[in-house]
Image (cartoon, rainbow, N blue to C red; front, side):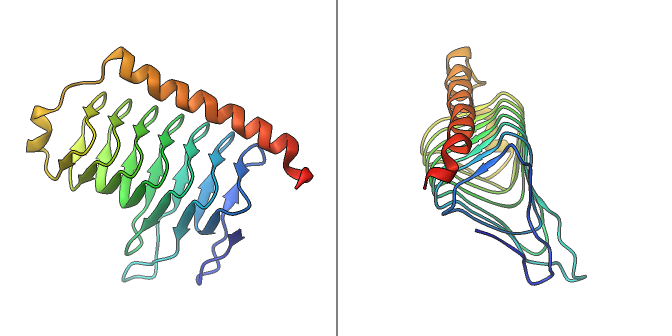
Length: 186
């Protein structure tokens, strides 16, 4: 479902993107080319700051927002998801937040008030809050990172771990093409 927010802002979805009919996009949302938005995802840009303004939620080209993901911002803050980035099933990205290009955010992870650098992998069930994750980092499953100082113990992404993220992104690009091809069969 694509709908306006109370300010009258409506999502802008590139014609090559696929948004599952069960997903909800509300408000100042920009979806770039070849994006896959899976079933029951909710992307909602509707809260304003004290001046009545809000930043958009931007989903970069060739990215995928998988089943049950929630992306939202508080008090007019924005969210940017980079290009060729995967946000895996049931993750929460709560702005203000920025996720770089070629990232993988694992199942059930939570990102809040943070910047995640390009090429970073955040594995399943992790929390990243209130910090800046430098490019190329690997955050293992079930980690809770709440400061820049805690990042000193994290190991950079290995080529094998980056390959996993790239394979997920490629699989979801194929889903965009497949679902767009059969969308009128339902």
